[in-house]
Image (cartoon, rainbow, N blue to C red; front, side):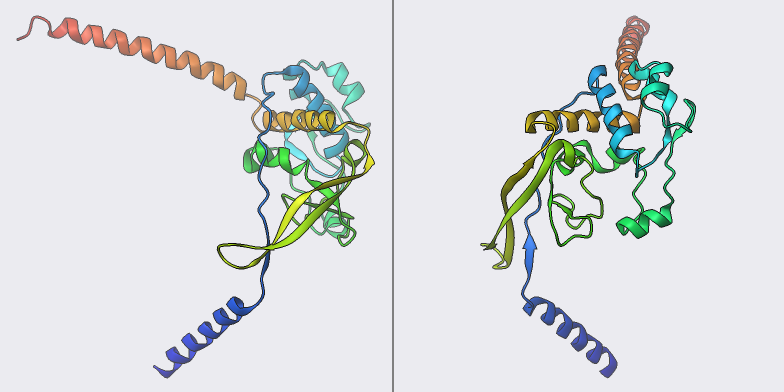
Length: 251
């Protein structure tokens, strides 16, 4: 009994210590709604180009083959001339040469495979994340992110968006009384190759492509789903009329 009382006392002391310690939390970032370009081939093609040029250097997409891009209206010749690295072939998967051990040493963690990242994270999360980087000299890469704080990934699209600083202010939560770091806004330090509108549009294209890549057959599935529902509706109607005809003379 004394052992149980001692254990409970220790747990209570630990909880009290955590409760008494000053806490400064950061407000959770609100996700922006990603534009839907899943049926826009030009948008998906542009997103594929950005993905290969900027994302595929560190992230792999091992469940995706280059020749599947023909579903987006890109010919194999265009894939070979514009989207393939010198050692790759059209039938290869989107793999990278960087070793996981090297990636972990450089970034602190191995970059995840992006084959189904859009389904795992959600389009809104990816869209907001790729637009929420800011300069942070305290981080090893020199970058931080509002959606994923202290992320190990650098801002690979900074040449397009430019360099930004984030403004924060410290306040007190009216419900808990805890100190909260509130995000105020961004300050553009240096301009990028794109305007903010063009950059957001390009990120939307990239996210739409990543969503398509996570399930290339999704548009076919949706079209088939409509026909299946129509067929089931017709079958239900015929079954209902057949049932009525069968029972009409039976009282």
